[in-house]
Amino acid sequence: MNRRGRLVLGALGAVVVGVLLWEGYKAVGDPDGTMLFGTRILPRTDDGAMPHVWTILSRFGDPELSGGDPIWLVVLQACLFTLRSVALGFVAGGLIGLLLAVLMQRLRIVERGLLPYVILSQTVPLIALAPVIAGWGGRLSIGAYPWQPWMSVTVIAMYLAFFPVAVGMLRGLQSPAPIAEELMRSYAAGWWQTLVKLRLPASTPYLFPALRLAAAAAVVGAVVGEISTGTRGGVGRLVIEYSREATTDPAKVFTAMIGAAALGLAVAALIGFSEFLLRRRRVRA
Amino acid sequence: MTAVLLEGVSKVFNAGRADEVTALTAVDLTVERGEFVTLIGPSGCGKSTLLRLVGDLTQPSTGTVTVAGKPAATARADQEYGIAFQQAGLFEWRTVQRNVELPLELRGTSKRERRERAREMLDLVGLGDFAGHYPAQLSGGMQQRVAIARALAVHPPLLLMDEPFGALDEMTRERLQDELLRICASTGTSTIFVTHSIPEAVYLSDRVVVMSARPGRITEVVPIDLGPRTEATRQSPGFFTGITKVRRALRGEAVPAGATS
Image (cartoon, rainbow over all chains, first blue to last red; front, side, top):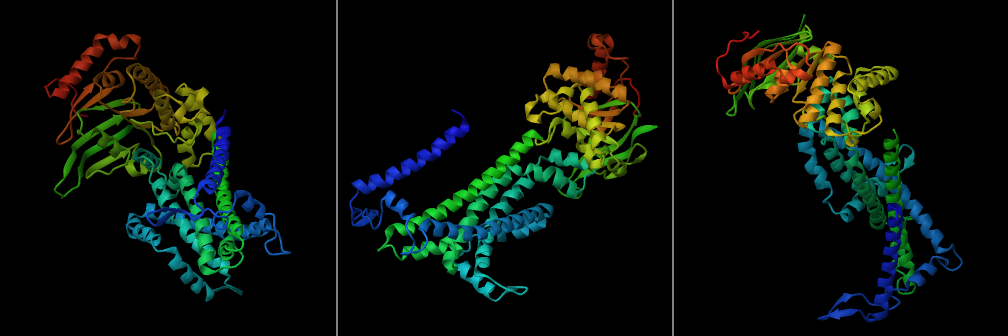
């Protein structure tokens, strides 16, 4: 069997295993949860805590509220809303990361001065940061347009996405062997030519892992950003709203969670696909 | 006209510090146009430093380096030399063809001319059929030939080579030596070649520059006159005489030889 076939089979297998574990534990587990020395170490298995897989799936087809749109449509629209923040945050964060990496590679002193702050930026708890960003945004406007809440979410996604790109690309730009740099020097190539002909192409093996991390970070940033700023319209907001209905409609919150996970998968797939295109082009060139 | 002229050149690393190292001292050397000169000596004798000085990849502490009648920095800017190192140093994301085109690209040569020139150079090193391959698909010897083609692509009047065959097996090495001599003869290129191998130095050179370490300096220049190299050259008495002369010079034994020119 070829590689791709095995990959598809593996992914499907993982889903099947996940479903079997869920339903298997639900079937044999104690409805009140598994206790060990008075501490619950595994969750309750009643329908309120762990709805059946088919209950969750069929919930997608039912209306969100009685008489409203079916829930799959609501979740899909919310995901698309969030996707805008993810995409913009990812692109802006990627560009900022790239710019920082180039700057740090160009000037040693910038690397020494900036890198600690780049690392520090990621240790600030996102939950603490999100309201601050939303608060600042509320006092801004772009020309005649007032600042929109989704823009704060985009900024938060960007804030998480730039980091892996900055660090990964810095390593990539520094990866050429001294002999290659010397060769460019012997050709009297300037800094820009060396960047374009040597450093950037040499950094592609570092670029795609960094982009995958950045994409995942942008999704996490957008969803958490929506939750902690209370931005309406996104899938993060749905998770919060639906979890409030957990006692009456336990399957509902899982539909939003599956939607958020699917959003992450879709973004990761997009990165994978663009990498595939680039590699294919290179082999053909 | 002389290809390379070094006058009173010295190089001190970390000058004025506790770890100061005198890499080269009082070096005078002339390489005539079309001449093949080899630098040989123990590790740390500064032969690679000397080559890098000629290429303006490092600057002398004292003295002047003139390449093709110009200061070394100007000569580098004008791409008056091609350089090859012990590692081929090919760009793995470029095909063989596009690796050879790289120096031409940086010079702003038109696409058509680049393509033609790269073809010509690859034919010269016998790799015309591998233009579309990637470096990773080639053997070490083939990669090194691509590196030589790349060094020759701009038709430089001078070729600088830092142990280019050092990592190759003996058979590949001898074949590439013959190829290099043929290429240099057909293009009229002057060459400065750094090596550790005495037979290689004698076989390739018009003159062998023998150096010694601490401080790095030229101790002897051994002229070699073997005429056109053939199959028989490696077994000829003249070849072995040359080897003996160079070996003696390396040991520091006095031999009657041409003065440092």
